[in-house]
Image (cartoon, rainbow, N blue to C red; front, side):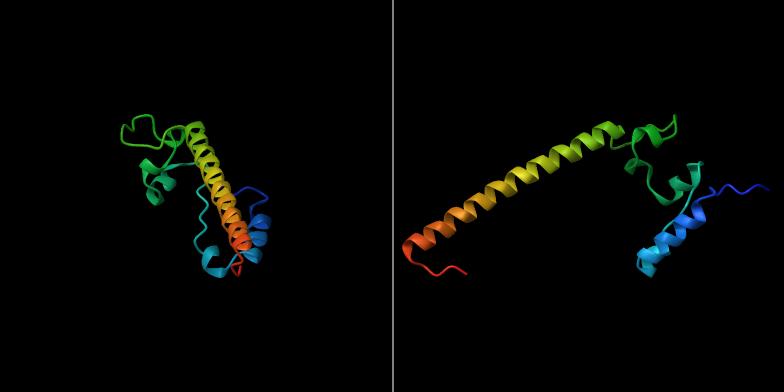
Length: 104
């Protein structure tokens, strides 16, 4: 029976094992090109539409493009809010200095 493991797998696995903590190494699984093994470990509703079987009609997160777009949108909102908070903190710091308060 021919091996379904790619030729570079052993090398990549050794590099990953060297860099990762031992508990994480044992959690890594390789499923190959058949997705039935993935469906046993991950619920179908957590996968993008492209990775679901054609006859699946349950809930899903949408297409990969939609998931990435939503992630980028959330990241931009977070950065905007963080920049506003940082700006507000500088205003308070400047106000404390102007009033003669001690700044940590």
